[in-house]
Image (tube, rainbow, N blue to C red; front, side):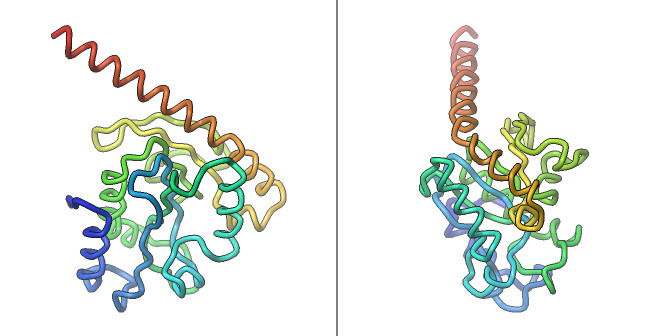
Amino acid sequence: MHFTSLIALQADLEANYQTLPLVEKAIDVVHGEGNEQASVMLIGEAPGYYESVERRPFVGRSGQLLRKVLAESGLQASQVYISNIIKVRPPDNRDPLPHEILAFKPYLDAEINLIKPKLIVTLGRFSMSKFLPDVKVSQVHGRLHKIKWNEQTLFILPMYHPAAALRATKIKESFIQDFAKIKKVVDFVQTAKESEEFKEIVKEALL
């Protein structure tokens, strides 16, 4: 799927809702939210009840925690785009099923291609598995990963899902600590990307 803007992507998603699992009507869709030129993209699991009512990602209890630690991290709202692996609330907030994740995959991939974030923060195991399928969040949270994805170089920072942070004090402590260093990670990634681009320019100049 190729789109020229997030508006076009969202319009297509709503126009073709009948081809997607879980969607009974176009207004069931909860789109991503934020700046199309954001330097950081956060990817969660799926909308919950409050998200389905307000049609905005991360506005319930876990969303309030996420937005609080984001603000405390020093990132501006204009630097962030927030989305989910699937764009519709599963029944009773159950885990998304593999075929559901696959059905929404082209739209998430298109979001990533449009935004071109410097850093992708995965929230929980489902979004982490998209890029790092063979690890556990407890093993790698807060550790930066550089990967090849769809012929692109991406920087991935796995984090606990804020809903998990609300359920366990130790996880919440780790969640807050990981987010506290996110601005430094963004600065590091920016330097690394600029260095890579410089190397490519030099290489092309020498050919």
